[in-house]
Length: 129
Image 1 (cartoon, rainbow, N blue to C red):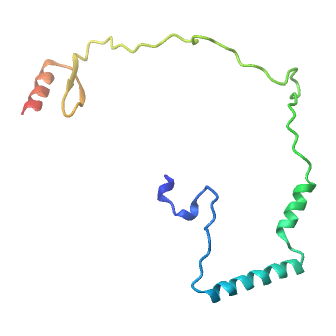
Image 2 (spheres, rainbow, N blue to C red; image 1 turned 90 degrees about the vertical axis):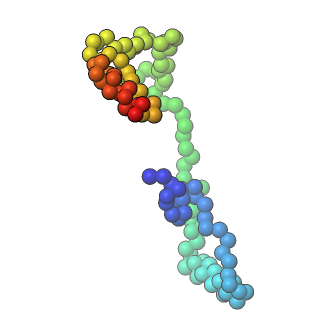
Image 3 (cartoon, rainbow, N blue to C red; image 1 turned 120 degrees about the vertical axis):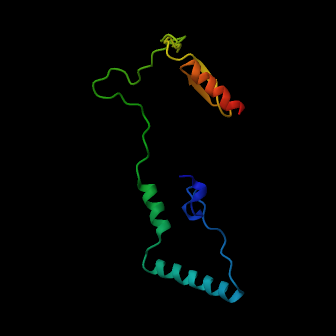
């Protein structure tokens, strides 16, 4: 299903909601005080998530991108075969039967197969009348 039919909260581009606007200065001041008290409480109980994340990232071993040879193989990379000009003959579809006499146009460029002379006459009358 297309993304234009979904609610904006299901966005996959990682954007946050944006700047929070308050009704008045008192609510903004209260929100700032609550935020400061929350940070102090987290610091008191040593639950600073950003610091933990930073320490864990620095302690992790660096990624190793060296090309290794798989077990049982003598080379690390096998180049693919180059075939210039293509490898198969072109296929031409041609009707070789005798049942279809031709193709007629019925309504608004609608191609219809014609099997007999009577069908051709009927189709031509439908177009004109």
